[in-house]
Image 1: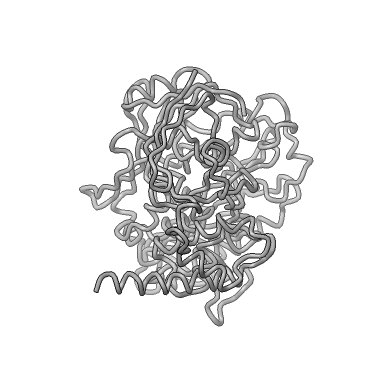
Image 2: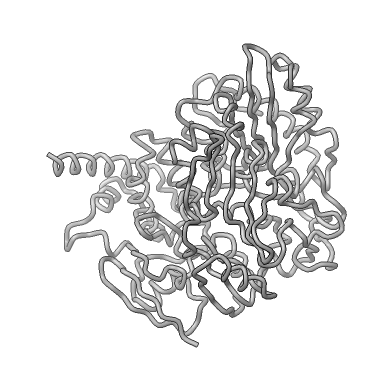
Amino acid sequence: MKIFDYVRPATVPEAVAAAAEPGSAYLAGGANLLDLMKGGAMRPDRLVDVTRLPGLDRLERLADGGMRIGALAPNADLAHDADFARAYPAVAEALLSGASAQLRNAATVGGNLMQRTRCSYFYDVASACNRREPGAGCDALQGENRLHAVIGWSKHCIATHPSDFCVPLVALDAVVEIEGTGGRREIALEDLHRLPGDTPERESALEPGDLIVALRLPGDAARFAAHARYLKLRERTSFAFAVVSAAAALDLNGGAIRSARLALGGVAAKPWRARAAEEALAGANADEAAFRKAAEAALADAKPSGDNAFKIELAKRIVVRALALAVAGTPERLPALPASPFSSVPGALHHA
Amino acid sequence: MTFSLSLTVNGEHRDVVLDDPRVTLLDLLRERLDLTGTKKGCDRGQCGACTVLVNGKRVNSCLALALSLDGAEVVTIEGLAQGDELHPVQAAFIAHDGFQCGFCTPGQIMSAVGLIDEGQAGDDPERVREGMSGNICRCGAYRGITEAVLEAQKLLAERDRRNAA
């Protein structure tokens, strides 16, 4: 690991000023950053430790019925907050399907949003990676790429965003509050992460010094609470990133869909909101025919970036299944294996 | 440049001066505080061998920067037993053969202590297995580990009930 300076500011403005200096990186839980620094994929000159900034770990109920989550709230605390999980159950399920209990205790809300891709060529400093080193090339294009992107990729980068948490968040119109050198601003989570285009090194809308201080979920999004699920296919039962995942949330009026929210994980360099599918679902009967139509709409622009055509069909099936689970209703208690299609409930299908 | 930090480790106050900011909690425990019970497996947060409690929560000490934990309370495997009396989780791992080679065991036990304290798993073996999925055992002692966690949890709940009465 390269040597670095370590600073621990006491206030947000001090942190922003320190991090605006070139070569700086924010340190919160460290779960992703230290891993990347050990492998040399990230080589910051200065760590700006934000863990002591006051008031950033709070969970607040907002006047519109929504919730504001401080960026330093640990993933586990948020997932296990009863009020939060009742209002936004698919978000809690996504959080609990991610990583391990140890990592969920350390990882923060802001850190989860800002985690880097798990593309192995990004991690391996001996490989060419445009995201890590602009202009170097992309070894994933001709490499082991069965888990890479099928939507929104470019010939410069085919990596995916690994977060589970972000998938239901983007479906529910989450907003990110940012403190920067120019003061406070906010953007939709959907606009935080960028597709690679010809500048894959520009992963987010954040500028140097920008610090995510909070995340907001609108009160309006809680209307989906009774029919909201996250479904995540992994290559092993637990403690693995998504091959493909989907967050499905429905507002039902009897057997008809008043409105729907749908987002996909593991398919693109950002959590992928499937608006065309949402439009196809609005007003339809909540049945398999409508779900299949929605799945086709969600993946209409998908194309393989390598050895991963299977992910397109898989994503369609995960969408159909997530919608069917959402119709069945949010369970009173999350299953033993959150978001897993491999349910131990007798009679449940074990194939996507 | 040197960096100072204070930690409470297994109930004991420790002042540490570091000459390098890169030291992880794992390396601090093993190389500077002679607490080698906490194991270095993958050193990348994937195996769980380095699991300790920080402020009561189980974490991977390999991915925790020591400097960032200034003021924290840390409990390692060395801090569980009371003299010669093993912690109920330690005793249950022995009773149920929750290990073979033993390398992952300190991390498994610390993770189990954290899991029981979190109180999310109940008596469901599937929830225990899911809650312990951050701890890998190459010997494959998972069956004994699950049984040990379930039994220790029951014993601790009974102890809490007795203490409350």
